[in-house]
Image (cartoon, rainbow, N blue to C red; front, side, top):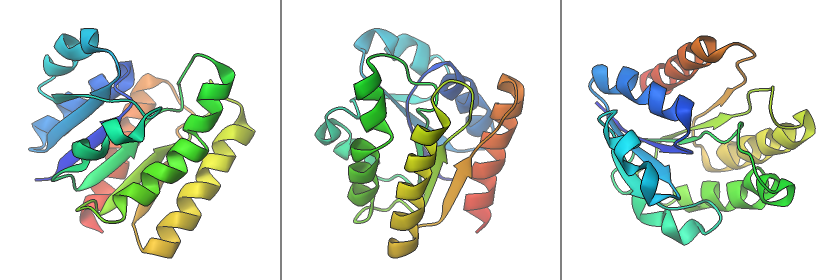
Length: 163
C-alpha cells in the first residue's frame, strides 16, 4: 500500500482515485476550492486544500506520500497562470519533494488541451530534476479518451510502485 498525492483534483483525478483505493492505496487529492471537498471525499480520497499557485499550501500534503502526481495537463484559466504550472511552479514543486518521503513522480503531459510545447517544457523540467535527484519518474502522455487516460495513469502508478 502507498499514499498517493494527486495535485490537480479535476474530473479524471477523481475518477482515478477509486481505482487506486480499490487496490489498497490511500489517496490525497488537492483542490484550491473548498467547494470541491464533497466530490473528492465521495471517492474515498482525502481532500487537501492547496494550490500550485502558492506551493507553501501544498507542503503539508506531502507528509507520508510515496508517489506524487502532477495532473494538470487539462488545466484551464489564464494562459500565463497555466504556463507557470508547467514551468516555475512545477520546478519548485519537484525541488520541494526532494527532502520528503516521496519516492516517485508522475507528470501528466497528455496532449489535447494545452500546447505541446508547454508540456514538452514540463517534461524537460521533471526529467532533468528526477535524474539529478534519483527520483523515479513516469511521464503520462496518453493520447486517448478518458478511459485510456485512466488505464495509463493506473499503469504508471503500478510501474513506479514495482520499481
